[in-house]
Image 1 (cartoon, rainbow, N blue to C red):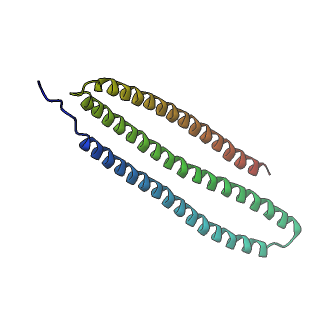
Image 2: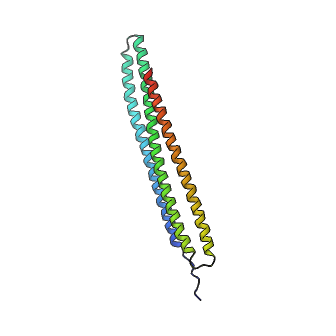
Length: 181
């Protein structure tokens, strides 16, 4: 009679831990990239605002009558609205890009986890009486989890597309309403 072989789960566990650490580091890098882009945007916006306010002060000092002042007020309101819309759109782009990267990383992590679990269940099913039932249950659970995550990914993608459409519509509306005045 052959002795029952008990599979070693040390290597799959170590592989999963390494994959989790790698995924965490990749997520942190991606989040830091997004934060860095936002800081660069804010710094560029602050510089542009400082320059613009300097020009506005000069224009105000050059005003000679109420009609010029009213025309300047309308121009400044339009410029401010357009700058705000551009800034909001830039933030949206950065956040969307970061979200897409994080979603991709999560999908890769889930794929690796699923693959690792599949290999572990195959190893678990070898040599132990009744282990095939547990392995099949684990495979079924992983399949259901994968299906659920795919549904969540699709919903997230649809939400992102809807948000992008709305952002474009709002930005376009802001630019068009500013031009009409």
